[in-house]
Length: 177
Image 1 (cartoon, one colour):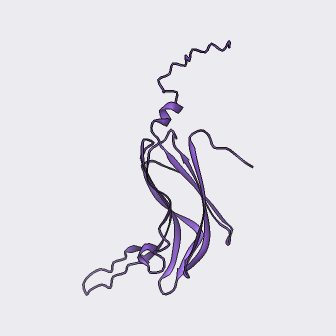
Image 2: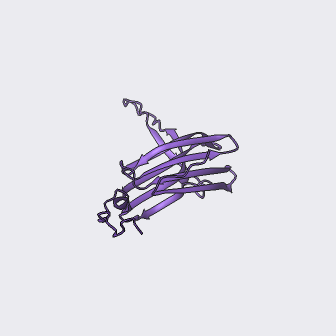
Image 3: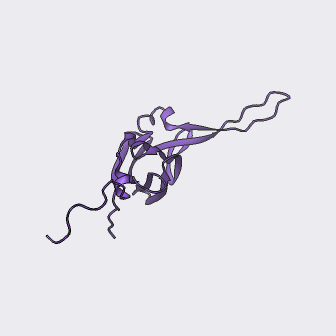
């Protein structure tokens, strides 16, 4: 089934091979749909795919003003003596169509139990710490990886889409040409 996005969407499809390290040799696909003039704020929808393990994971709209790290079920990296790093979609979108800050891509992080050995007379502390691939030799060349990263400006396109372009609809053409 084919579909064409509505007016003022940007579609980006990318296949990213990860093969710079022996720790992670895989290819991940990302389909990004940027809905510039969404009434709830500019939004991003993603579809993450990986063929080797038959993964197809959709991520519904993330709107301007939100930042999310979304774990992708079934995608992980085994790092000997450290643990399994889960691959996440990382999404930051802020601003409006005139000045939009975006960071959309992939990262890999590991939740570590930061148990601290208690000193006599002190309570045992359980703290989760996060270790991300950018701190691990051999993975920091690969992650984080961004399909979009930067500031983008789409001007006042949303005003024009709403019909607020300053034109009263009278173009001088009466339709009887």
